[in-house]
Image 1 (cartoon, one colour):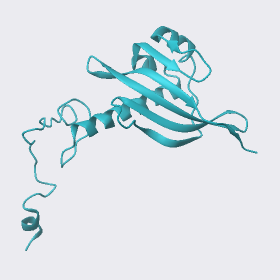
Image 2 (image 1 turned 120 degrees about the vertical axis):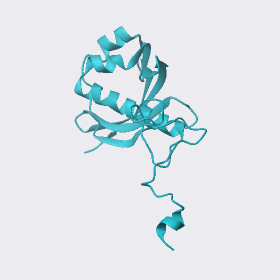
Image 3 (image 1 turned 120 degrees about the horizontal axis):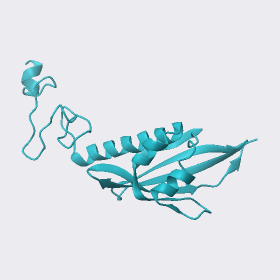
Image 4 (image 1 turned 90 degrees about the horizontal axis):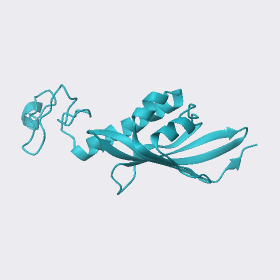
Length: 171
């Protein structure tokens, strides 16, 4: 018996059309029919594809913040964005956030403990845990959460919450 007979013609080189419940895959939009997103030979659940696109969006936004791309980071946020951090009054509104927060590049983490990932049971909410050195020898673990909203079919950051975990001094 040959491999083709075993697989019933399901070889990965064989073209695969969309199932009745799937959107057709278009090379122009990167797959999935919804614009952007990845292509999988075996298909991909639309929710999984959306999470992947949104994780990539947050990671791209982080890169913009770390290199000091003020305009790029600003374009990826809603007009009513709010940023909350411990011991501070929330900063609300895109113009104020741009002036007070985006005016300088974000610090790069020393170590990423948990990469950007979806928050379980909360669609459109993503988080990451990282360690930063804010002063010599003082390492701070920070959990940052992003809440996304859609404007014109594109994801935007609507709310950012920073949680500072206990600090420890490394001698």
